[in-house]
Image 1 (cartoon, rainbow, N blue to C red):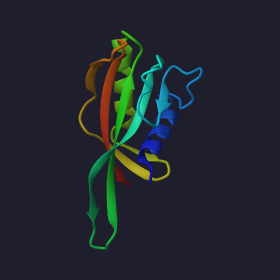
Image 2: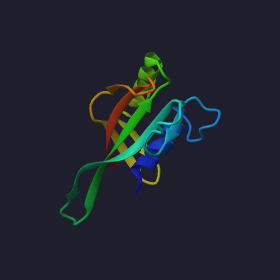
Image 3: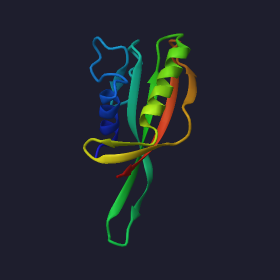
Length: 132
């Protein structure tokens, strides 16, 4: 089970960005953002989840969450907001297939984090995953 990988692959399959950094505007990483890269980035990070549900059948259902961090180009607020909204729309109430099949539900709206030390705008989005 690797929900962050599944979400990163889904975002790439929907042309939100690419996991290959060279030659692409938005770089999708299956980890934290790279503060040393000026390139716009999307980081997909496993961020915990709710306690597993134990069913009467004895099967435990895990309910992981992922955090998606957006870091735009320096001083490009509007394009970073547009990318945050694109990710929100692409993943919100979606069923995806990867290593596992998930139903994804947003946990709140995109959250503006401010500008980092290099002036790049940053956003955070959180999603609950449920096995389909």
